[in-house]
Length: 295
Image 1 (cartoon, helix red, strand yellow):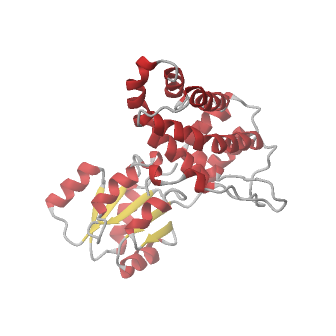
Image 2: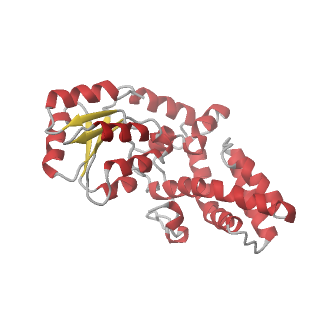
Image 3: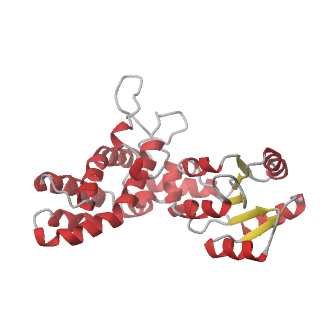
């Protein structure tokens, strides 16, 4: 499902035991993707705590649906209430600046000004079309990741910079992850058995699940079956690359027919290697070790 197909108002806020809206978010994933430039926030404000940043995330999720509606109206050149639209954008600008997040700020400033300038509206429509999917994508990821606080969540009083440093230290020793997508249960089982001691393996039998899963996990390498019903491995590449954190993630194709034409097409779309079926365990390990990176 693409971001623009989701009804933002249909995403409820989780309720804590006392009935209040209380969430912790998946901060490790947020840091890895650097959504809303969280790394810049930690660097710019050494005193910023995890709890303080969490409150700003909650505020972002609260304001985002209204801003998304404004972007849709701009994109369709349909302005209802210029003062109200400008207020929504300015509230978001104020928050993003407080979060030390430059993403979207320049565009929002321009759109806010265009609310009062009819001469700018044609260009504003173009500008809104260019950024609305990116903004909606960030919001939907945050909305999906909200969870109730648990014992493993970082202390609210912990400095955000210290928490990020701890994540980086832990990440240096973490087990790397591989997402294997194949419509053959036997192939997936073989891959899992070969790799499970050295890597965290996510077997995916249905390629239609990939986009949804990538909203929650961040693999370090993809193994994609070239030929699958409904969605081929080639068609999965642009879906994977649409996630900022996977612009350069290694993609290795599994194929029973490793023709030159197939290899050329896959490489042009961003694949880095091929592995022919039937899979040889030693060669599978070798290919993954060659391309997977710590980070």
